[in-house]
Length: 148
Image (tube, rainbow, N blue to C red; front, side):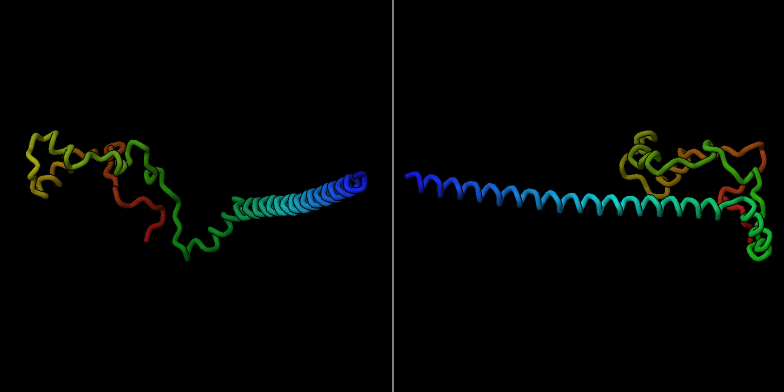
């Protein structure tokens, strides 16, 4: 009986040693993966730092001014006028804020069978327009600073 018990204990000990080795091996593989990921993260951070430095170099005002002077005639660049900029109150409404056609009908008290021309006319009446600045006539379409 003692021999069978010893054989069972040797088997359990061998299984435990094999399980311990397997767990240790998996842990080492995970540690290698963690080191690999840390190296990749460091490489990405270094790349980001390099790109930020490159961006800072490319957007230096004196460099941009030199480029504007060199290529200004070819690109027909002109300074942006202060009247070309708009205030938030001058922007049109978002589409999500526009009244829907059934809301227009309810406000006007008309029936559901509204001709398309009348619905468009009612919609145009209720749509707010941008407020022009200083009484001067502003161009609602042109917003860029480059003239053709």
